[in-house]
Length: 327
Image 1 (cartoon, rainbow, N blue to C red):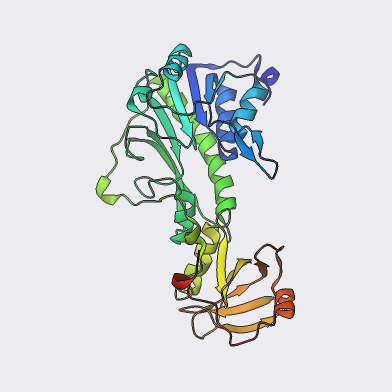
Image 2 (cartoon, one colour):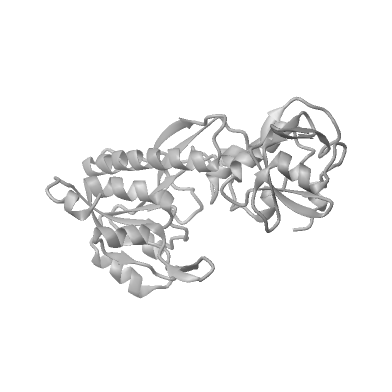
């Protein structure tokens, strides 16, 4: 929504500072702009991108500039008196964070009179941490959701203000689930701010004993565990679809695998059971997976059958166990 489209709308009373960086946060920013006065946008600093390492603003920063909104991109928040003065000078009643990507120190959390609300993409206290979308899929969850929480100095430990479930479609990858949760978070944060504006937002403490964790993904999280069940292998594939993607090793060579689905089959974990136009069938600890595309290192992805025809791969060969694969 452009600035000119916001003109003439009857905005509600709260003044909001918005903290976010990636494209995931854009629907949330847009939804808040449509209902409330956004007095400051805070995003991560510009970073080098692409082969030319061109300095590029994060999507939220670029959109804030398009909307003509005040923008700050501090390198650090802790012991940053200049930034604290900017936030205080914005006169924000409340701040909203959505995938901002930095820990907020208490000195910053205390500035808005209503503190900070965070949009977290899980049903807290489940999947606290940096990658709740990915780990919910890896864990085989059938339902996740969005939590609007009051931010405190802990890692997603603040009181719950609103929650809403979201069923996970069986074929969704982390990319699909991210899109669905971004739209849900945009709708839910507006409801939370409306309730806050009326004084009707009631905090509920989290049950720390029920907490589970979703740490930031590392490259090795994408390695196929062939001894896992076929369903677990596919769940991991869905969870790491955006990054680091699904990686397997054969004869010491690295391959990215795509289009994984659960199939019937039995053999030694990692054993190639068959191949045809629909893909390569590979045994798991229980059942098998069919792989539709294969991408050799430093090459483009190709249909699995084309890879078979050009690589000399044969039935009976086995992919390397992930634990012994070199990173």
